[in-house]
Each structure stands twice: as C-alpha cells, then as structure tokens.
Image (cartoon, rainbow, N blue to C red; front, side, top):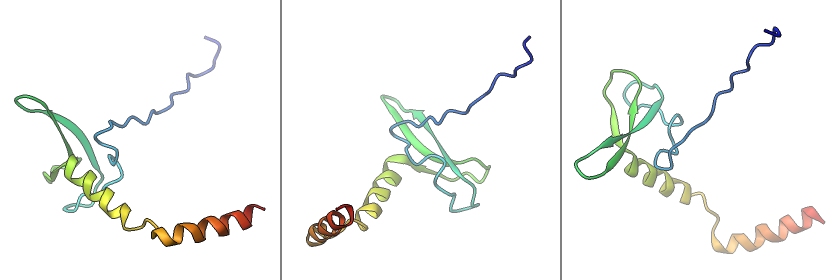
Length: 93
C-alpha cells in the first residue's frame, strides 16, 4: 500500500551431496547440470542430470570424487609450501 515493492532475492541452496549443481556442463548437449535425490529401496541416491531432454544422468558420488581428485592435482608440493610461506611473510612485512 505504501507503493514500495517487495524485493525478491534468490537463495543459493545446495545440498551437501550436490555441491557442484549448476557448475557442471552436460557432455551431450552443453547445458547446465542440476542435481536431485532419488529414493531407492532403502536409502536416497543423489544424481546430477541435464535440464534438457537429452537424458544425461550421472551418480553425484562419482562426479564429486572425480572433482576432488582433479583439485588435488593443483595442490602445491610439500617442499613448495615452505617457499610460499616465506614469500608470503616478506610480502606482508
């Protein structure tokens, strides 16, 4: 009534089992992958799947583990950590 519109803000919601939802690209059609849980006989299973009707679907557990392995490739070697720490301390002081 005061003439002010309600401001709608979007929330970023991510399940712990689907942290890459919205960041992955479908290898078949190039669209974004989303994710959702699926109820099995005794527990929930999580999948990343394409938003288009191309039908691509992959287990979230597998893709998450592959992503972790990829990130680990970029970790500095143990000998380099000391060099980075020394150079960082000289920059700060």
